[in-house]
Image (cartoon, rainbow, N blue to C red):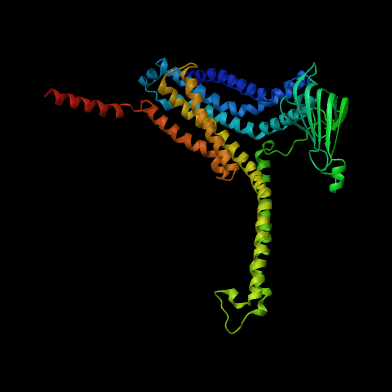
Length: 481
């Protein structure tokens, strides 16, 4: 390796390592901040918190790597231009392409590493992180109750003004709607104070209410008017009232290491995704065929065979089929057709939601497959934007390069997110949705590379200002004459 190549790599790797660690730290902290409400105060040991952070970090690495490549390429090439090292290299006959050649090979290596990471480590980290986070959320469900709004626990709607105490299990101004009955909201309980008692691993949450009022409506349960008038409702006040809520589905007796969430699309490798997608497509197509067959079976065209004996053989009207039937048969055919059309519309309406969800599930897998491949190339794409941009602006450090890197990545991220959302809603194909941001960025990279090679700025301002300047010069010369 030549001295020049070593120097260029050293100039790039220093800001790359620093920016990668900074970006990774910021993204991990942002992710953990979103999960903080479900983690804090649940008595989770530091070991499990460290595991959660470790798996989260592994998940974030494929996102942090392209940002670090973009920012460090702008900084490294900008620093070389700012210190007139580009000018010295060009005077010695070294072109821009020759200068960045070792960085291109390094970026190709980083793209390969990112692909391996996305295919092998990313699914594993998502699997471990989601299961650990899910198990942490299930611990001490009393802490998940939010003051000031209705909290849904099984068949109870619970609202309270304040939650306090060392364990935050004491409540003020409690309002509870009991929806466990057959007729919905018939029981209402209010209390001045309350207390939640729940043990780790218990399937029940116990509510103890103090100084409250109980009301139950019986009119919906009474079958006759006489019974409704006899006892329309019952009510009572109480000093202490206790009841249990079954939260086994929420809590369970599972340890934090249990792994129950397994079938998510982002927990699979590319090979597993490619094996699953054809199965999902066949299942979806089979559903469409079965629904189409059902609608065809409801077709009113078959009704004509029922009345074929009523046809008039001599004067058969092939254009207006109904004219071949008697008035009574016409009415019967039209009524039957109307019934079957309504049945077909009802069938379509009832099956629309499950069909859409099945299609969306297929789109999730498709988008994940193509999205990982596109994301692995993002390092290379963003490098060919950052490197020429840095040589054009000729500014190193974290100032202007940071602003430009954020602006470019926001455009890239917005395009990627928009494409993914459109693909998931079947507005565009998953392949187009995964590559739509690359289709925007690649022409920009080519444009910047050409302008940097020809020592031009980002914009040719002379093409705009020169005609205006010439116009005023001509106007002034005419005025002087």
